[in-house]
Length: 260
Image 1: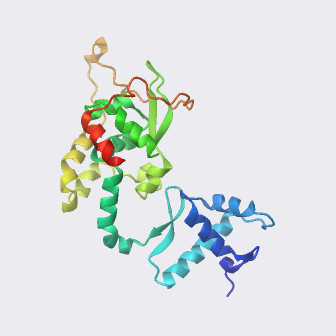
Image 2: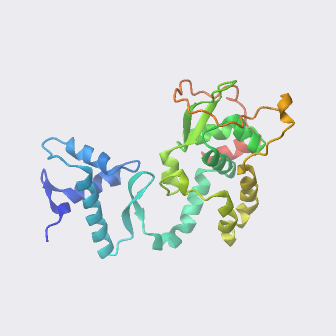
Image 3: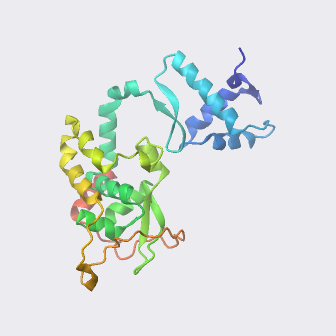
């Protein structure tokens, strides 16, 4: 039986070329990305994304037949190599320790708020956390877990932030709609392994609920926290965060040093 993955392209098997490209990529690649890379090679025949998808299916079937510990999975908006779910328990301790080294509890807190409320301004994050988040926001930007999404269409023109495809890849999801809903958080936290995070997540669930409308707030005496939905102004010029370059709580700074 002939397999598309065994078709030769410039002396190399199509399947091996696809494996090499996905393995070497620093981000998930779509089938169209892979096809474009191969077709751009000198003397290469035209390759389309359906060809690539078919080859990936053949590769995964072969890996499964051989009992390999990994497959090519679609996550974060593209294809990437990942271990089989049945081996996750063996990697749990390593992955937990690695994640702790990469991102602090304060950063996780700010990242969760941004993920659920995006696009969101730093003052709104500060309001929910109850502490200045400038230092943590810059850490998340450096790790490419969040990005500037434009500016708030209102007084101050504050920068808006949203999560990135790297965020999706990091947490193994394909879209924000796959994040657990606030009503599902309590169920997730029933696991004993989540005990230390339970109180924080329950407080976060409360913060994520729509704010109550105060009929007496029309006098303008209350602080404006941008409760209205920000616009998605795509002109993100000037990405320096105003007035908080040297700000941030001492706790956030200490956690940030651990991230490094």
